[in-house]
Image 1 (tube, rainbow, N blue to C red):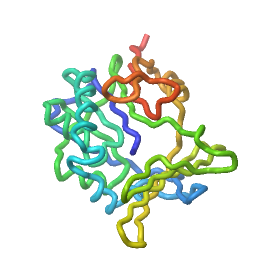
Image 2: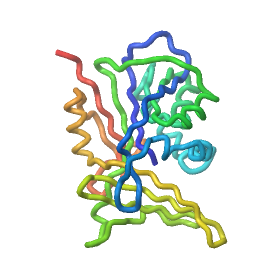
Image 3: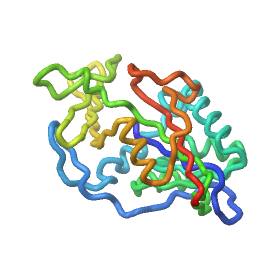
Image 4: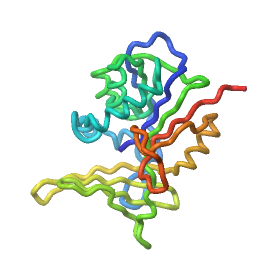
Length: 242
């Protein structure tokens, strides 16, 4: 799962009428290998093949029971909007919000993901101002599952798919490995590198940027966040300049 962020409500914008994915210069310094990170571009990870296979209508992250609560909660927070989504991807959430009449814009670093989105979206521009909210969905690093001397944990195991993470705890880096296979002997591997952060670290980053934590739950349905939670949806409010 890619980390997602939404900036919503009290945005300065011209009269918006849809979605706009903003292209940005790909980030260098993103890495991959089983246990270390090598320099590569963001769109080398989220390439044309990944973009074309990302959408799974009605299944996985696109299943109504997964997507619906996220869109409901974001629509509630946005009010009349507009909304700005970071890592908009192919528009999984943004298009669903736009279909409900909420003006949405997005930022995406991967050109193939942007190209995939452009087949379904038009354009607008927005900027966050005081009083707006920033909403982010992240997973909690599962370092407590690492046995002594081991660097990997399995996060999903199901028929035809195994997902595992390899950690570099010194650099706070993790590489997610997604193995997909059928009845034969061959498997397909997709890997994505990340820098993991803790909820408290995210709160400090928000504070330094002028945001205050407003709410944190496990999921979009409002489940209580505890020390055992594996993920979180955090809502930050941008403080008015004084």
